[in-house]
Length: 196
Image (cartoon, rainbow, N blue to C red):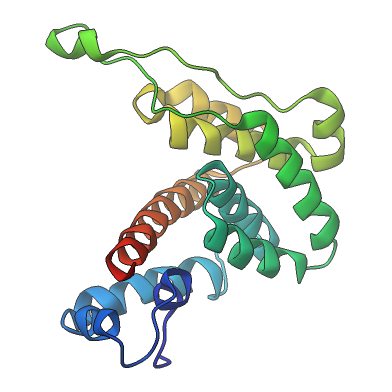
């Protein structure tokens, strides 16, 4: 692993700084965060999810979180893929349509139901879906669900992914990317706040 990992770069951590020393106090945590990144975005995929698809979802998650460093990082990687520049533009426009606050969702009936919050459900418009294709359109809709409606996800949502050409293993990879990006963005934000 290089001296500076991806989370360092997204956090703006300079080698030898106090934050660099702080992160190095937990080498296993640091190594695992980088290993997760490498497994999702650098390793050969065996689940039928292309690198371009993985980076598209990652860029979309960063855009939904309005995380500038994350957007810059993942959009740059996406734009380096064949057809990536056009795809990056499409994803940015979809993120503008999908922007909201959240989280939303409903708990099972009981004491937590008073915390239920209704919110918008994102659907890719037909014209955009024609450009993105059914598979990526379904992935973006599912990604929005996991980011803003995590407690509303149900079996029918996975069935929609399968209907759009995602295998079970591919759907798991998609969910792992959303979860990892949510962690990475929050961790980088916290580290930037500590360094301010």
